[in-house]
Length: 68
Image (cartoon, rainbow, N blue to C red; front, side, top):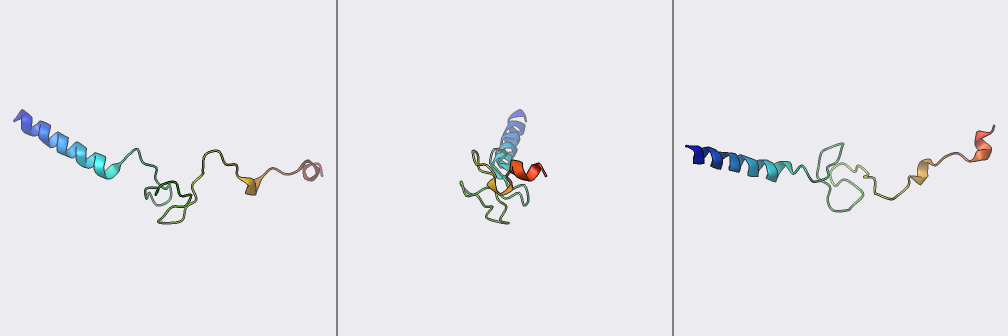
């Protein structure tokens, strides 16, 4: 009886680890797993932040613009 419970727990653990994959990075919008090192989500097009890159599109204002 004990061995059957241990085996059932082992099978449940393997299924959880196979399908949930808690260690893989997922898209915050659609929860799809990230495919490699691509910057876009393959399902919805979400743009992942790449480590070490600055967001140049929304930089700080220049000093001359802030003094007005």
